[in-house]
Length: 189
Image (cartoon, rainbow, N blue to C red):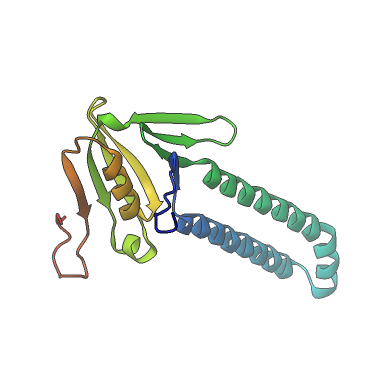
């Protein structure tokens, strides 16, 4: 029994948008909030002398600063909750796209209806390990996209393993601006 390989069976896999984009949004909020505070204080300093400036900052600037802190905190919590509540769930029978904080929405794509799997990953996508997986749903005649997810090559291989009768294995679309000097045409690998 010690020589037997232990297997872990998973009923589903949850995939979220790459955390790179959540961090990018949070850093942007910090930069915008810092810029607003600096502009606010410079605007006050231009119109008021230094003795009155301290009084004005305490009287008017402090409530504005407290409001901006609460606003920034609310936006930060909203973005984190939005990131946590939007995900793709892959199971043996279907792929679901679930999203929404207050009003939950779910789109379902049966596994047997998927015939093509494509992974699109540009230069920054390879650097920060994110990309988009496009799944061709032959019943709806549309592409379902798993947009800007983390580690798309790994999840594309998971999808390929569970999809029966996959017409086209995986096609990686790369932009070759810096790699081989071409004009950016897509290349199949």
